[in-house]
Length: 261
Image (cartoon, rainbow, N blue to C red; front, side):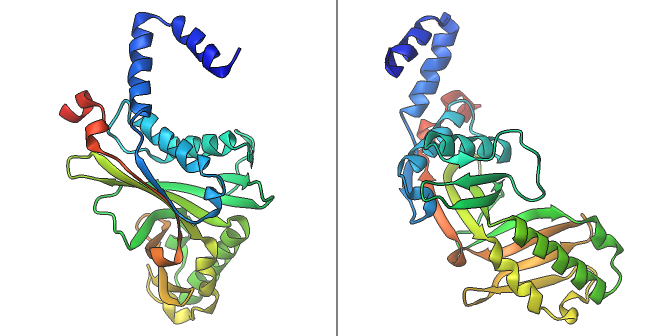
């Protein structure tokens, strides 16, 4: 039995309400977002971008809410599995900073941190990471030398563990409708220039330290946020990142009942 015949047999076994649900889901898949792939390792096979576009379609078959981190992580993994790439097993032991290891057809393994954002007024030239990691020690550091030493230790560990941060950005209209998704990769080496930052850069209780990368003196800005005990990354220049793909959504294809009410 072919996959198509097997699918038909399963649909025939559904209840009437099950048929209605599947019909709505299939209608959503029939209106995928318009994809514009970038030049990147994720696009070695164009099927990856197509599959993830279907993930977006499936998600918006029932909601106008943006695809957020948990759903993004599942969808990202499923797209990689569809191409039969080697992945970290689901439910494997959690490692600090890393969400997924991916080995593509070229045999290269990449250690990725997966994040998403649907913040208001996203920029087309820069991006922010509201929490790279928690860092309770920030509130206890009282001198610039202490802050510098702990920060360098943290980012050395981060760069040793993570090759890149992959961020799904959802752009929304004022009434919450998502109209555009971008998948952007930030190299962890963007933080390497911290090693050259002088103690004076850490003088404030909650300092912001600029990172130089790929010829950009302020490729990213690291904020040690004492109020929330976390590390925030601000103003990452998209010019030094990899744009894997863009998906544009026609709001008219979103669920009518959700849009209206």
